[in-house]
Every structure is written in structure tokens, then in C-alpha cells.
Image 1 (cartoon, rainbow, N blue to C red):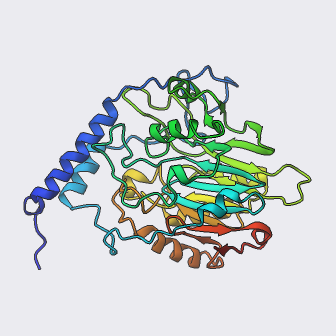
Image 2 (image 1 turned 135 degrees about the horizontal axis):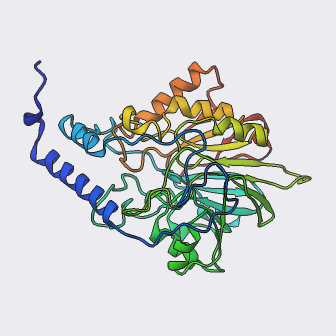
Image 3 (image 1 turned 135 degrees about the vertical axis):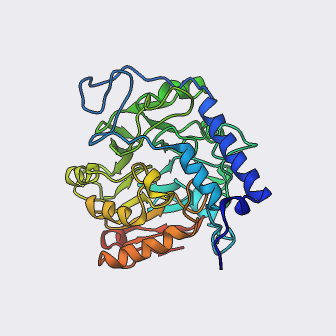
Length: 379
């Protein structure tokens, strides 16, 4: 069968999609927010620049956004998933989660948003509950699967971890609602430069950290660690705020020690060996696995499932959960491809099949003492 040329593939529906995508890119680039760089702490550090931040090991190459958009237009990408966007969604026991103060659990809400319960503390990563990952709710990447837990159903959140300021990771409506939760706002832990943005939104219980900085919150030790990525929310603010991942540990001497690593959003780099060497390993890690195609454009900033497995090994994680897939179409890989490739990558790496897995949206796993053996039990 002869391959259709570019013109025959430009159906009205595809053309509308492409125009909406391009419009979204323009709107995001043109949306000038008041994200400002804080006065650098630790000036002279390698990742600090005169007006912002940079990656540790090499700068991100600049690739043509328009070339990528044209290629996906003429090739009809991304292809829909085989399941037609009908991903299974679990319905966790909200009453049990709200009452839980003793068991260590992880619930994947969607994309990079998860609820971690450890040592009686409720922690949410990169809260994103809105319909679109965009400055506007009428245009931009649209959520394909609803949040596994509605924001209103969350238990009282003690700590919010923000990895960087991209719209699919730092959602205005979500953080504003969390700030208004009954019982008082959570502590928002953010990268350097984002505190002023939070203050502009009326959010004051904020602490910002530089790479390798440590703080103590709700009886836990929390560290901000490097990743390979970038930041921007508008025109002219690229790399003005920092990006990274988070490490959370119970303090030394805790009767039920547990260590957690949230990688945020990242391309592959030697940073992960540095993290593994510094902390010695983790009981549980959240590592991104999706939005990696096309490789020539995405690889510097987003790992693929094979690189995600390498991160798992670099940081010496006993168990890892794949995130950053199946929720928003942000790249050219089908939304259901990353889990299949992850399973292949785990097999090729010679790891136990349950060492690095994905969850359903809304699925909760209980870790507890079994975390030390890499086992989990689904509720």
C-alpha cells in the first residue's frame, strides 16, 4: 500500500489539532508571569549563572520546536493508544487513606502527582488536578484520564513537593486550593526562584531550596537534589528558576526507617550516580518514563523507559514506580507505550519484574516493612 503524502494526511481534524497545538505553544510562550529569580544562594556554584541556573554536566541543546510540530503534523502523531484512552482507574478507600497514620503508602494520582504517606505525614508531589496543562483551561494539553483521587478527597496534606515550574508540574489552581485546605495550608517546598511566584498567588507557607540543601519538616529530613531539565512559564524567563528532584527520609533512629526519592522531570545525566552515592539508596522512587519521542527533540530533557531503569540502578532504588505517562499527551509517544517498554527494559536489565512497575491511576500500594525487600501489597 502506497504511503500517503503529507498533503493527503492533513485531514481537517488533524489540521485543527495542529493549529490548536501551535496556538498553545504561542500562548504558553507569550504568557508573561512574574516568575523571578531569587538572589542566588551559594553564588559561584557551577549550576548558578549570572541571571539564573544551568544543568550540572552540560547545557541542554536548543532544538527546533517548529520542526518538531511540523513532523508530528505530517506524520499524524501522536498515535492514539491501543486502548482508545480507556485507562483503568482504581478507586482507593478514601476514608482509610484519610485515617491512615501508621502505614506507608503510595497512591499514583496521575502524571507526576502522587500521594505519599510515611511516618504519619501526607506528602503530595507536583499537584496537577486541572483539566489542561496550560495557563488557560480552554486550550492546551488536555487530561486524558481523571485524577485518581480528587483534590477535595485528599487527606490533610502536610508537605507539597514542587520539582519545577512547567505547567504540567506546577498548576496554579491546584496549589491555590491546597493552600486553602481545611486545617491550614501545607508547607510548600520549592526550587530556588519559585517562592516569589507563590507569594504572588497568596501562598506564604513556602520554603525554597537549592540543590543539595536540606530542611526538616513534619519530623522528616528533606533534600532538594539535581536533575537535568529546565524551567519557564512565559516569554523570557527560561532557566530563571531552578528544577530538580526531592529526597525524603525518616530521621536516624526512627523505628520504621523509610527513604523516598522523587525524580521530578529529567533527562539522563551523571546526576543520578551522584544522588545514589550520596544517599546510598532508597526504599521507593518515583521516576518519569514518558514523553520521550521524538528522541532528537525530547531526549535531553525527558528520559525514556530504558534510561529510567538506569536511573533506578544509579540511585540504588529497591522499588520504583513509573510516572509522567498516561495522563497528558506531551510528546509523540503513544500514551500506552511507556509501560510496555518499561517492562522490556526491566527484563533486559535482569531486574525482578516487580522492581520497577507502573500503577493504575488511583492505585494505592502499601509498603511498610516489605519495602526493605522490594515487595508491595496492593490494597
